[in-house]
Image 1 (cartoon, rainbow, N blue to C red):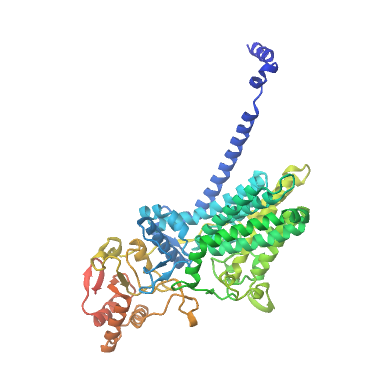
Image 2 (image 1 turned 180 degrees about the horizontal axis):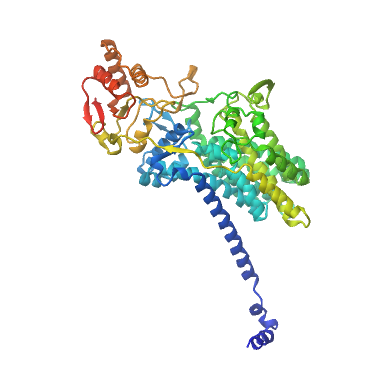
Amino acid sequence: MVEAVTSAVRTASGPDNDRVARPSAVTRWVTAATRRHRADLLAGLLFVALAGWLTHGLWPAPGTRMLALNPADQTLYEWFLALDARALRGDLGLVTDRLNAPDGVNLMANTSVLALGVLFAPVTLVFGAPVTFALLVAGNLAGTALAWYLLFTRTLRARRLAAGLGAALCGFGPGMVSQSNGHPHMTAQWLAPALVWLVVRLLRAADPAGRPDGPDRRRVTSSAVGLAATVTLGVFVGEEVLFLTALTLAVLAVGYGLADRDLARRALPGFAGGLLCAAGLALLLLAYPLRVQFAGPLGVADGIFPAAYFSADLTGWTRLSALTVLGSPDAVRLTSGPAEFTTFLGWPLLLVAAGCALWSRRRPLVRAAVAGALVTAALALGPEVVVGGVRTGVPGPYALLDGLPVVDGALPTRFALAVPPLVGTVLTLAVHRALREPGPARRLVPFAVGVALLTVFPTPLPTIDRPPLPEFVTGGHWRQCVRPGGVLVPVPTATPQQPGPMRWATAAGVEFGMPEGFFIGPYGPGGTATMGTWQRPTSALLADVARLGVAPTIGDRQRHQAALDVDAWGASCVALADDAPHAEPLRRTLEALLGPGTRVADAWTWRF
């Protein structure tokens, strides 16, 4: 039977039947595309699985868990997400009065992740801000890795194994994992590969080589429009990442141009024109938001954090992060906190990356990537080089930029976040080359890269139980004493050091305002940026009682001041929950200041 069928096929395989006997070009393309998509899907699933494992401490109930290493920033961002979700109810602006009442807060001057908050608003409204925050922590890690993977496979045409290894470092490197401790605006780096792709697309379209009619103006224009749209989105996600990406791309462009001068001469006119077009369009789109940020109500034009403090220790580059399997907790002393392990690549990865760069040095992109990595790594050292925790007195390259507008809003140590993607690019190109060549390099290079990456393999983010909220909040009893859109004063009030009371507003969908709180505002000398605002006398007095547990003697002066402060806040209600620190001395103090309170659920309240 088999012989008969084979004979029949051979008989039918004449010129007129080739389409039946052999797969067509379309069939071969579909088959290849299916294989590519399966490989891409597998890579995406692996990235999602790794991100899920790293953040599993927040699940299955994010409302009962918190990040152990930075709960304060998590509290802040959950409040932002709850506020942003109000956009679906038609309540969204660039300045809000729901915090720091009655002055308010400039959302553009804060890292309020407006775009992410609006995008995930349905999730926040249905499941709550803690769920959205947990999804963002994991999603940013997996999304960044996948975005770099697609860039490496589509733009660089790299083998999938090579792209996967490089993308893993980009998405799950020490800096990304440490920034996941409460900084979703810094880990939303999936925008960076999109910007790189658009710049590369613009460059290729601007190159007239092989085109009788010159540059592809249509693609130049569409790339410029895409760049403007992505930059605009980036402003509402995280301006610091956008700035670092733009700076790195500028260094790469110069480095690549020097490495391939013929391309630079051919493409420069069209490339520069496209960039100018993108910049002009982006400025049109962002003119009003940026005006609000720098010159609007409660806007700030300077950075808030001292560059000298938030600088990378030179020794940190050779050490391993405390959040990696081989890292040591002692590494914390070389950084400003557990969210800033932005260097910490370790000797193994640095040596393998250097070897790969040397082996692939003929490629212009490798030389440009090395130049970019060296520049950003040097800027991360800050205005003064620090070695092993000791200030050397040697000025760092960042000293040339220190104090410049916009630049001083980026912490020096975060310039190091540009290094892993550049190192990942070099590793991807080296592994891709090794897989195409016969000989020992075919196995040696991927093995060396894999082992080096294992040395920085991350550990799950530490988490803790979330302090429970009072029934007064979760049961909606606050509505009995706060008029719609009114101001609720929790006792003690929220501060940058103790932002816990902001969780009340988050749980209530930010339906009421609060005085003071955790935010960036112009309350420093001459309107410079500060974290939070000054406490009014009554809130400072109550904070002392909460800290010391001693009720002070209250006289007419304190009662008069309390009345002034309540009026200044525009308060509808002052509330003291039973779980407040030293609740009983606080209750006696409040009664001496404001008169008898009213019991509502598990809180004492005073209405106005």
